[in-house]
Length: 205
Image: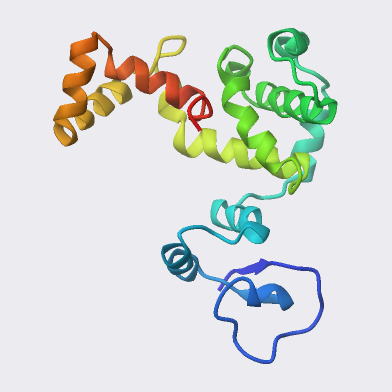
């Protein structure tokens, strides 16, 4: 079984832990199945270990060499005026966001052209700022973009029409009442869905 480091304390517990809180005493085998059971039982992962669990599930590589090669290229030209477009009073948080966006743009030039990327990435940076390194944050964002958001850029710079058509179909088939409300007010299900998705739902939560 893959091993998830939950704490830096040495030694092993005397008995097999029943959850991640007990597993804090050392390095223990934790499977995706057990984490799923824990999530179903508690409704959420323990806050103290949440980011470690995410990294474990996402299988982020912790590739410092790659990260260094990206950061050494400095602030990407697309984000040199980020402070004007996306002002943040917390300078440390702003630098973390600027760094993450620049790394993404150096990694894939397309990400230097995506206007909504700062709004999408900021919730990740804000949430992980106190728990994760800049490298870890960047790798989690990369994992999200690569595994769950690839279709978003299929018709770039236009919205992902195929994906939004699927969303619209799901709303109409699963919640006809909600779809009727959209029709009544003249709203496009796809357009509203895209506003929410492209901001990582940060505009409503």
